[in-house]
Image 1: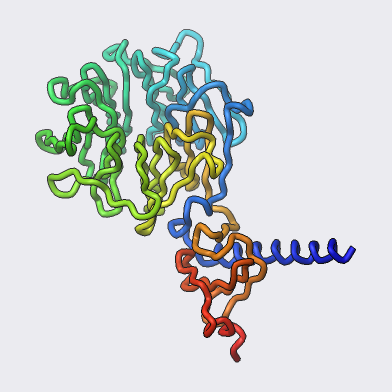
Image 2: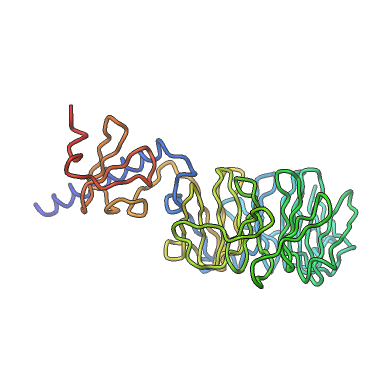
Length: 383
């Protein structure tokens, strides 16, 4: 009886300590300061009956729905149910093998397949005969109404303006256009098998990748305006006329980055062959299958308008969101992941008692956790 009572007391103290530590962190932390392990994470897995196939591309349309491209067609997701989309009678998709999708500012959903391009808008599906039978490898919808998309074999960059299709670059872009990016200055960048290209304004300019690397797979504009490039040889950035390795601090172990996005808080999320890399405030942390990701291999990454980050993998779908309560654990520097007691000090610090000792969290940042010394152990109780 005494032993059970002691266990109950310890359990209550642990739960109370965890709740207080999480609340204190949440009250003063921004999303950018959080490690990926501190986000609330939800996984939907194929093996649990969520879907029957892999999600190879994903986007959000203006009505708030998420759309998934698969090798068996389109799926619409409202956050709870995934429903297979069927085109109207007499308006078939060029193919059910979806290769790229994007939601446009005017509410349209652009659908790239291995047999052509289509647009879904106002309950009507329009296919583009000019590129019928072509493999669409990337799509970007510009704010001015232009839709840019890449083709393969040979690689070409195409634009649709006023429903007219115009393609170029067959002699320059090699076998495939993997990615297209319009940056904040409206310059157009292309990742092709022949390298990184600044396509407009002006004449196209090519930036060679180091060594014999395959052309860029994903492109994004970083916080400083530099173009960041995902390649099979790792994450790169354009500095002046040179493409160089992107400096990674923390868990930047070797893995192939397949896609990269910059979220609204300025962080970079990179889908790789070994989970998700999260780059923020000069740090790099990773979320893998052992942490609960639906699979090791990431196929797509998207931030929705609510700030949630969605990750598609070979085995399902994952969502990361900033929760009302976030955790501090040994991953952020605590001496132990179990908090037995918590005390806020008058100078804004938080003292955390763990089975391994007493820690001090200061300056409202989780990477400032320091082991308490004999001289500051009593600091919170000084009067």
